[in-house]
Length: 143
Image 1 (cartoon, rainbow, N blue to C red):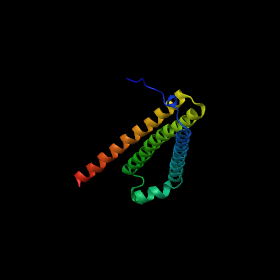
Image 2: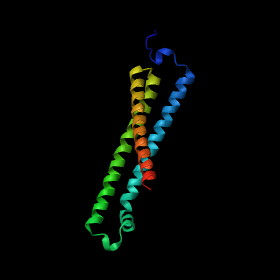
Image 3: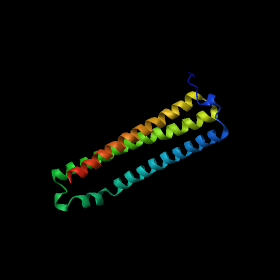
Image 4: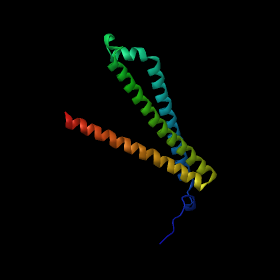
């Protein structure tokens, strides 16, 4: 039985190395664009909060306790979403950088660390997708 060989010991040719480098660049770009997009979204939510809250709650309900609880719930949900997206994009950008540097420097540990970060990104994405699917199915059953 053959021993486990490292990826760089398999003599990755120039085409494979250039493809992996290009993939890491696209992953980094995707991570940065999503991070910037969510940052702009939250900035707009802060700037336009007065208009947004007046759309959610009628003027006679703005000072009530239920309106305040609604605002707290919305803010808490946005903070949780921001944390999850931030952590996921951190894994994606960190993994892309480490893969690119691992290939460039021919450093197996750095390359493996990058693959591990990408694996964590996809694992989190899969869990979130399964949770979303569960709630979609739950919505179909309840109706």
